[in-house]
Length: 176
View 1 (cartoon, rainbow, N blue to C red):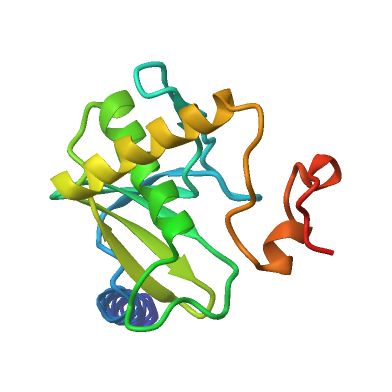
View 2: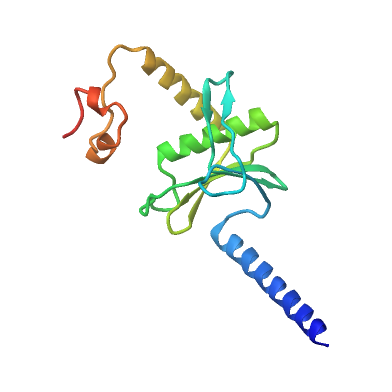
């Protein structure tokens, strides 16, 4: 009788946790599916660098989730102040779109959209539409062209961005 009671309790708890998990996913916008790739410290999955010679880009998304609609790249951001009205910062959007293109090319699976998750579980969806694909290709071409120039002008007035820049020590336009 005790074993039967323990089994019933375990089954009830399992159903409760499953329901809470499904409710949490629905509330935050994270899709149900198989998490099969993670590039996060201490996680059981080994991430590999995705590389496209065709596009000339490479990278490692934080997570990949296989859903019924395709593979969804997920990028986790520490920013506690995401843009208003459910939007995504342009640099985070282009990064996520690049992961969408890399996943589609390298894994050969459909990518319907990507997710950017800001601190506090603020989930933002990045649609992988034809217009966003064109914007990605245009941005890749613009970066290639900029790399060929001898001089490139700073394109912002944010000291925080400058302080974290990898070429700040060589930049004559760095904000101090």
